[in-house]
Length: 97
Image (cartoon, rainbow, N blue to C red; front, side, top):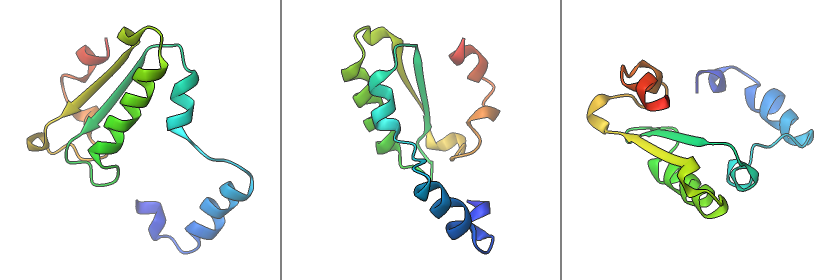
């Protein structure tokens, strides 16, 4: 979000990436993964709504043969982790392990 405030960010960075065909279609990418996938989402994420995290999980879960390889963990709003601070949660190392 902070970079979007810089003059020309949209035209120099985002538009250049689009012209070069650089897109990040996570919903398509998760369909071809076979490795374990852990999706972490804070309920108070103001950048990516929690429903998008849930949709990504559901897409991956449908695509994976081994459903046990796909995990979705949400963090309650009361923790105040938002979009950027999940890494500060002291429980994170244990969850990832």
